Amino acid sequence: MKKYCFVIDVARCENCNNCFLSCKDEHCGNDWPGYSLSQPLHGQRWINISRKERGQFPLIDVAYLPRPCMHCDDAPCIEAAQNGAVYKREDGIVLIDPEKAKGQKNIVEACPYGSIWWNEEEQIPQKCTFCAHLLDQGWKLPRCVQVCPTGALTIQKLGDAELEKLIASENLERLDSSGSGAKPRVFYKNLHRFNSCMIAGSVATGTGDNTECAVGATVKLFQDGNILLEQQTDDFGDFKFDKLDDNIGGLEIEILFDGKSVRKEIGSFDQSIFPGTIWI
Ligand code: SF4
Ligand code: SF4
Image (cartoon, rainbow, N blue to C red; front, side):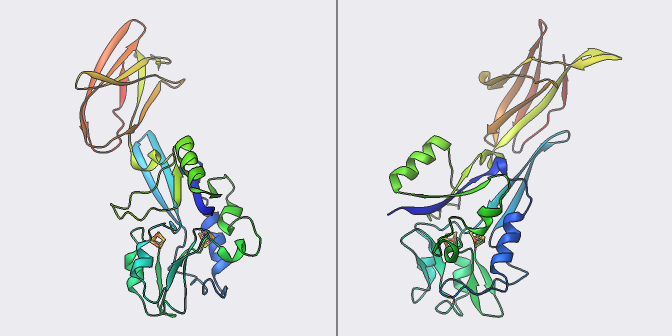
């Protein structure tokens, strides 16, 4: 049986919030019998966009991470629910039955991703339904995917082998849920924009009024004397080493340009940094 999953490209999300607004438009004031009760206008974010800023002025990278329910294969919310109030359909979609789940506030805390919201008025837990009511009517896409203007949000319906192939070919990753083992069915591309560090800097040359960007300078990143990465500066004299782990030490940068070389010690760092303009 093929199952649905989200494939979300962090590099394409521009934080326009169309997904969030379309989810509100689809679900606020609308009961979808058999699927969900109306989403409250305020206080619930069935698709929630997290923001991450890396680096320091002037070389900053800002990334956005849309987070719907992960529709986990081993969903802790299903485990926590009584009377089968949360269940997984054969097509992979996890739904909360609003009638059976009435009063079961513990379901909210069971989600390791914070994807379930409590409706105080109705006394029910609520979350993203993958817009199952639309898919079951023959619509090809959930509302949020329909309206995403950059193609950051997509869905796939795949067998297990096809999914593994896609994960490998597109370098997809699941969100870390601190070892919950929930096996989410939301896969992210370019997740390094969110969960890795970078060292971004500039190289300039010359003195006094006669200074310019060092275009095409070779920049080498060393750790404990061993070369880790190497690249050339761009047309603005900038470089960026990305996808670095945090908490690594013994770092040093060497710049080679126009027959000259200079070294700058970085030491250790636990977040993305801008080591300033390096003069050569
Ligand atoms: Fe359940 Fe949370 Fe997983 Fe969604 S993300 S299926 S609410 S455990
Ligand atoms: Fe909202 Fe539907 Fe998108 Fe889920 S799939 S976040 S319910 S619009």
